[in-house]
Image (cartoon, rainbow, N blue to C red; front, side):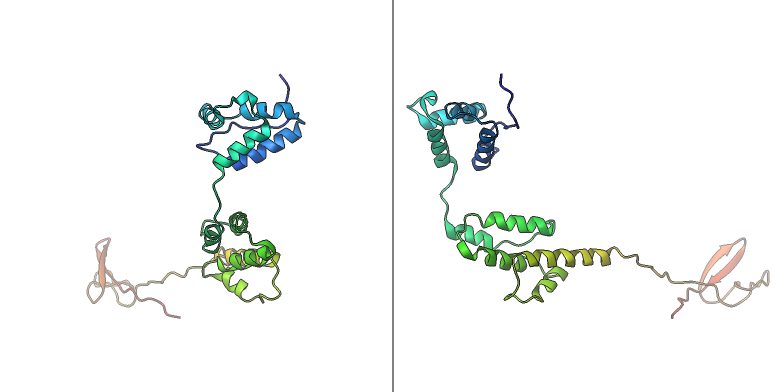
Length: 224
C-alpha cells in the first residue's frame, strides 16, 4: 500500500461541506502527484457508506468505475453546491453584526467569508472596511473607529485601530480598584456598671451584650 503525504478525512455529506472537502482533496492529489487515472479512485474511497451510495445514485445508470474524475466532480458540484442568489448573500453580509463572544480578528474573518459570493468586484475593500466598522456595537472600539476619516481610511487600518482600542479598554477594566469600606466606631458614654468609656448601659443606638455589659454602638460613617 502506498504511503501518502498528508491526511484526507472521510467525507460525510450530512456533516461536512463538499466545497471544503473538494478543496482538501485537490491539495491531497497535488501533494502526492496522483495520476489522472487514479484520481477518481482517491475520490471514491473517501466518502462514508451513505455518501458513496448517494454518489452511485447520482451517476445511475452509469457505473462509478466508468466515470472520470472530472465528471464525478461536475456531478457532485451540481448536487452539493446550491445556486447562489447575489442579493441574498449581500443581505447576509450587510446585516452582519459583531457578536460579543467574537474576537476582532474572528469578526474580520467572518466578514470576508460572507463576502465570497457577493460579487463586489473592485468595491470589495471598501464594503469590507465599511461593514467591519459599522458592525461594531456601541462602545469604545466603535467610537475610536468613527473618529477616523473614511476618505483616507484603508482596509487594514480599522482592524489595527479596533485592536488597540480593545486592548486599552481591557487594560482599564483590569486595573486594581481600591474599595473604601465605611468605618464604624463606638462613640461617647461610659458603662454604668464598669465606668469604662466607649459603652454605656442606656441611651440611643443599637445594643449588644459583651461580658455582661450593654454596649451602645453608633454606626456613624466617616465622611471625607
